[in-house]
Length: 366
Ligand code: PHE
Image (tube, rainbow, N blue to C red; front, top):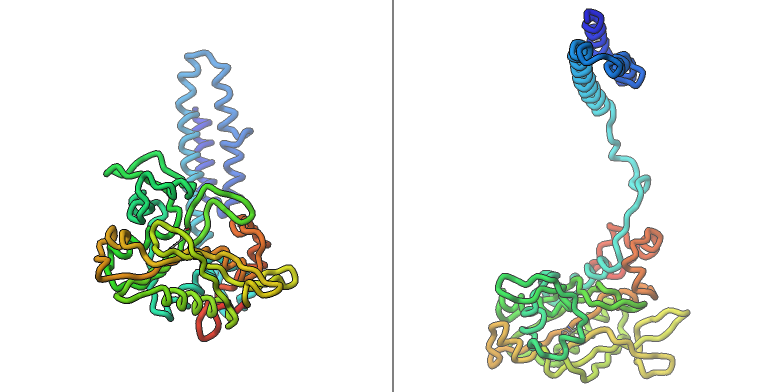
């Protein structure tokens, strides 16, 4: 008994005197370690009679508790002191060149979204946003696709199991067009917005991924017509691809939310195994590539969004951001966009300092 008491006192004194973590660890091994005297004393309990054990155990247990507590407290104190000392000793040299640090890069999709916003801002468009988890009213119904509309089936929609509190289906938005509805309901008319963002469809191959990016455009005013749409797209693509010989082809098409509807193709040629935008798609060595849909906003959609179709009209477009990024920066496989492979990003990524500006060039590479 006295033995344990004095041994414990000696251990507590040694712990208090431990001047660093190594010395403390040595003390821990000597007491609570596998071969430490406290552990060995605990083991002897197993061989005792119940009476002997009842007599001996409390002293050993309390020795273990007080030593363990003292070890923890001293450890915390020593660690705090070490941190203080390290903070006092270390300084950061802000004048060191940044190249010494590992370099992250901006994903081409982010870069292209910044480029889009820059170009459209110059044309007077504000950026609008909406949720990626949408309800079917905004994603479909208000865009003139009621429950039975066949176009709903074409979208390969991801639905959630639960409905909204007011009984609407919940889904991952299949296009950025619901932002048209939200923006008109929020801001009324006139309006001039773009809405870049993620969209989702259950679809996957070299040119389709279950998540991809679109940019929606919407212009509503008194006398907007198809000519404005064509001019806006042409002006945008000239600025985006930084060349003047962009030729667009507008093909009659169908979307429930636009009337008339046109699909937009851009002329390109194959140069050195790479698609390069520019020139007339019907010229020798050229072809057309589809880059999006557009049209005059359907009067029904204006009504759903609370606008009077007798007073307001306008156009909308939806472009595939990943597609135009591939065209501009020469990537072939869309799936690589979302693999998160550091080598791909190092190759195709952009420096955070390479901010797209109209004055410096929206396509400048670092
Ligand atoms: N939302 C359509 C799509 O994803 C594209 C589109 C947008 C068409 C705006 C017309 C007007 O396919």
